[in-house]
Length: 185
Image 1 (tube, rainbow, N blue to C red):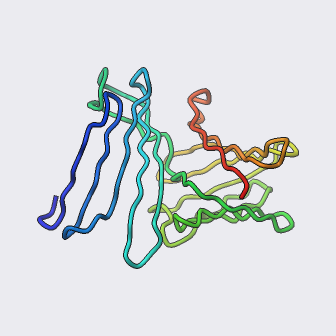
Image 2 (cartoon, helix red, strand yellow):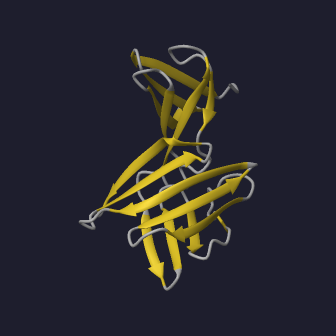
């Protein structure tokens, strides 16, 4: 860590760590790491604070490549688009505008399967694209590409119209999914 930064790590249970990063004594980022019961999946939720921008919340779900227990080992990031606690959707004719307002990322996806760049001040590094297609009245399937990786995810509207389930997975491991459920405000 550079001289002006500190990182504090507190193990709150056998499967959880809380990390706090400070710069010049000012809190910049807090993270919560949680291991699955079998220690094969690590979910890291982070909140970053910026004096000039929004508070950003993101989540990464990784799968174990090596190591047998605890946090030590080699992990593979299962996604390169960050998942966020707030999402807004707007449908204009044949374009779905997906906005993660707290993260500064958005996608304007058409349903013709054409690749569209992820945009915004906090878009992932490099070019990340997203292609969308309808697979039912209430479900949209997406394929994202970036930095040599491909990932699939879906948005599905519940029958009551009050929740949307977002799921994501590696095309080579479709049963190993991450999921967020968004409730309508």
